[in-house]
Image 1 (tube, rainbow, N blue to C red):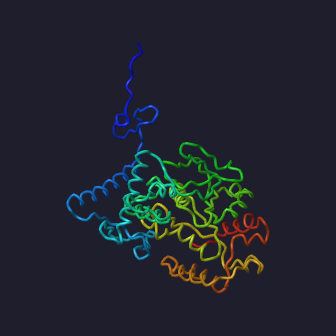
Image 2 (spheres, helix red, strand yellow):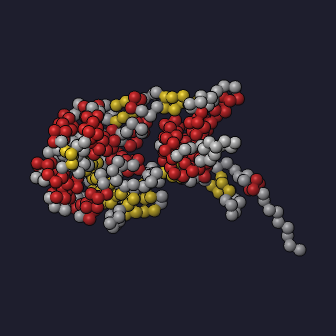
Image 3 (cartoon, rainbow, N blue to C red):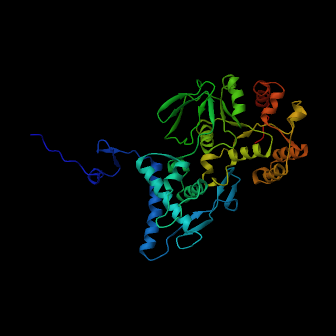
Length: 398
């Protein structure tokens, strides 16, 4: 007679010790490793939820404060050379008709993040939008109208919980590439960036030490270029090999992953960061974000900003200095002019004679130029003559 077996119910199978999860196949508890940052984030979410519950049980209106992400609440720390977030905050209340929706969305995403940490999994910004998207029972009201609304709430949670998006187990689309004299350990996989062919190593959006480690860092500096088109020229010409460096690109405004990687290379390995960017207000702004930080992430400038970064981009004087033709001129429009004046008024540029002269000359020229304009001299002029000469002369703005 066959031995009778008892099938465990889902409820019984779910009874696992704390810090364990139950797989669908084995029904046995499996250890879930939590990093210190996971514990910190989980505790911050628990405190947020507890404050809401405590208020409700005491017949008080549930509410919490969200630090203000605005220029008015951003301070320039001249001594440290970075932007910092101020103390201003907005109170988000459940019974305020103008805030109830945001209140609900914040708690909804908090639950989603808590689940990700518990399962030791990550999700994309798009994934978080869909994870929290549903129609509220008994209404035609959706929890989120679009992803932009969802993304904004996640940014609020970053500053409320005091955790970067990456610490919330949320990643963004990969954008950025690296090649050069370094080996990367990416989630346990060893990747030699000296042998990456024409494509290079795709810089992930999460570059924290528990995910990304560096090995055999033999470079003397990092050259960060603005766009992939320029990066391809440097990679094909093996610039990183000839000049013993690491070559990165950010596809325009660099992502947090790119900025975090550059910051770590600078701080952990003392590598100078040189930025080859366009001669226009947008190239100047990209440099500003890399160097001083940004308003939206001012609360994490110490982990992202690189005060010692140097601007080795195309300069206003290069039209004459390099003997370029009129073909490379791109006329400044009203928006460019307005943006240039705003950048010139930044506290870290306002008292910098070199930057004031640079922006004034660009405005005086009446045109902007891209790094690609140097191709009109020769396809490899930028890699074989322009950048090497600037490096030898230490000709940069800081």
